Image (cartoon, rainbow, N blue to C red; front, side):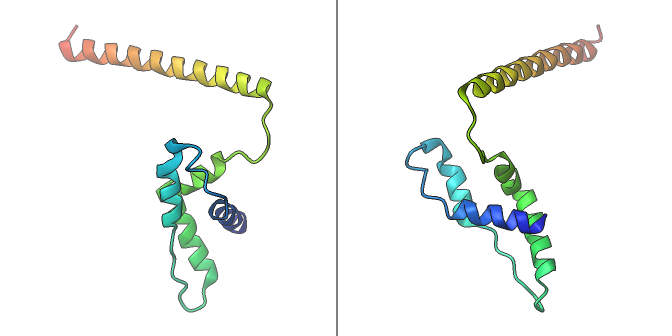
Length: 110
């Protein structure tokens, strides 16, 4: 697990600069450039890797790695995924609207 995380981190940092192509990812690129630094004390590499993994989880870096696309997705698959994402978003908005109306009714005492 830890070695796979370390491998993915090294691939992220060795990528060419795509921030010029996609200006929206500039903040993500900046976050990746900062990196995560961990001190290895008493040659205890396992503890250092464990601390690095915790820091990656807390900073959201691990989510970026997992979300990263590792293989080509066909256009038909992209359409299906986009439709599912839209449906999920609409359901979430509908639920939020219902919860908001319920809370308003409770606050007003109706």
